[in-house]
Amino acid sequence: MSTPIQNIKAIKPAAPVNDQEQDKSQAQLDYEEGRGYIERGEAALAAVSLHNALQGYEEEGNREGVANALNQLGHACLQRKEYEKALNHYQRAWDICDELNDPMSLTALSKQLVEVQKGLKNYSKALEICFDILDTCQRNNDPQGTVATLDIIAEIYLDAGDREKAADTYKTAASIHQNFKHQKIAESYLQKAAELSSSKY
Image (tube, rainbow, N blue to C red; front, side):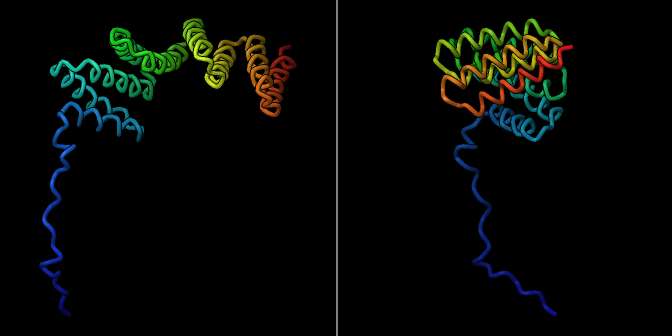
């Protein structure tokens, strides 16, 4: 039995490389590859690509690229629970973003630094960063960000064994929801607070 031969007209030349891909530097390609590995939870492979990206961005003198690569390296270390290394990468990224006056990136990095400090069990430092984030949320009139940060603060208090302060934090979150007439959500926070208070002893 003969196999049908594909019509020559149906065979297309290899797709040309996308112009956007051609315009990207090797550092950018390495960076994107590293981010992809992080998204798939492959931290070790991500670290290799991101170290290459970091080196490339440093050679190019691309400060934003360096900050982005450091940030992603921090994520890779966080996935591997290498908290000291993550702290170093995030801190270097923070310093660059601070120099570049990039408040949005600083806020995102603050949240990552909270995770690192929690991992290191430096609860007071984690709380200090959270309180700075709370100040930013309140200055920007961001109740959603405020409540999300209060949730993190309550978790930190629980990790640190301070159930009473965790309960108080949940009550604060409840009052914000009550102000916005989110009664059911407010009740769920009050329930959490009550459970913590009743199981204190």
